Image 1 (spheres, helix red, strand yellow):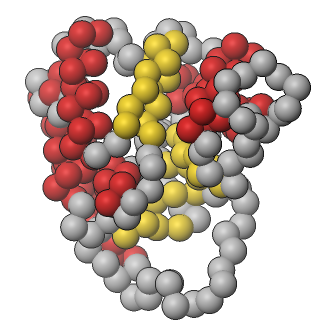
Image 2 (cartoon, rainbow, N blue to C red):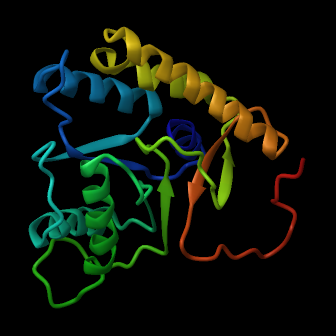
Length: 211
């Protein structure tokens, strides 16, 4: 959802990118290199970034992790939260989503020892980063026309993930192709897909993107 992030920041939204783990180990990376890459990507997208540094590959959905994320939600006073789509072959993605879903609830509790003021984010949206071989069926598409290059730059900023491994370079291209196809569904150049379990409310039809 890099195009959406870049667009939201330019629209004046206060966006915080929360890394649950440091993403290591990987075949070509290390924690120090990944930290530099993540900082560069966040700079390209124009967002603030925070790292919880929970254990990668063995991430667990538990009270401790829920409360850590809830504390960040409260400190940032997040009105909207994004998490990975809940059906995935990647265990860390699934665990992250369960943590975030419960942290959204925990963040509103008044009799709990967490930093910041209680808040219940109005929206929880899911973005697609799934390792399953299936086609997304999103609830809505976000127009990212004009932000494609910044999205690409933010992805290849992770050089150890998407540049050095030759087989992963194609990921950047099929993401671009997917965004262009999804954009064609709503009559724009590029779009990113999102899912919501809660209905979106409209106050009028003026803001709908029509083909």
